Length: 327
Image (cartoon, rainbow, N blue to C red; front, side, top):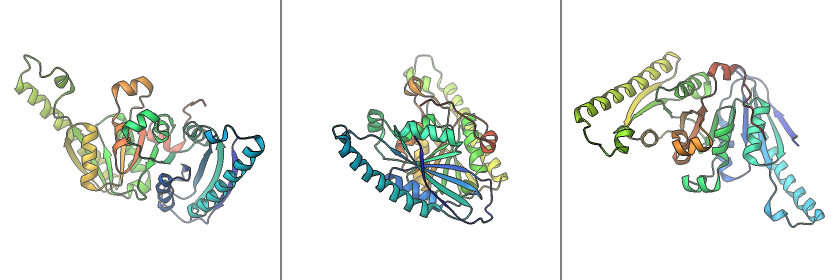
């Protein structure tokens, strides 16, 4: 059962942009502090509604407790959660926005996705425990699962500021959606954006074939030059659109694998946020084919905003749809 515990609101001021529905998942851990600090410092549009979600999950240590002992221990846990949420809402309240908190009982990732769907959230913000790729694969990752399944963009916070921003762009529909979101949301559009397109050093089929007999070197170079030119075109066209929308943006074309190229650009520009589109592959398809977005989520030292390829950004911005996630 969902229990709404607390509400804080503040007076209105004129903030540019549309109101938003923001869901912050907080477990009180050190990694959640970045998400909380980021949410507190962003200048949100007028009328923004912030929902703070705390998932109270059953703990292994509680399995063998007697009913009386369990009630006593859990009452203390709930009191601690209530006190933490009250202090957090005090920090999050500000001009033009309303902050509420709720506690749900359940599995964290499933509960976050379900609440985002039910609330019509336009962005989910979560912390990152920085387990690394191997640990995340073996143990599971709440942030990665939420990014896979949430019906809206997911921001995994590792920094308390948003800019400068790296925007990965490969010309796909997912990248265009991410680009449109950066331009549409005022708190992103006011930051400096570096649009990064990455071209491979060798085509994937060439590497798999080990070079292969009868492959003409001149033809191969021509194909690579064409791919690099296309990458430059993607980046330059995206910069032109962003600039026309009032965003300060520049283009960079890197060579290598998509994930490594984006990571290099993040390091070079000291980016605090990387924005990537995702085609939304899940399950076996994701494991077999790999995912640039997932690799960036695990490896990037900065915050990561993942925009899944689900619907047009205009449709998302005006009215959040439903993804039909069952819990």
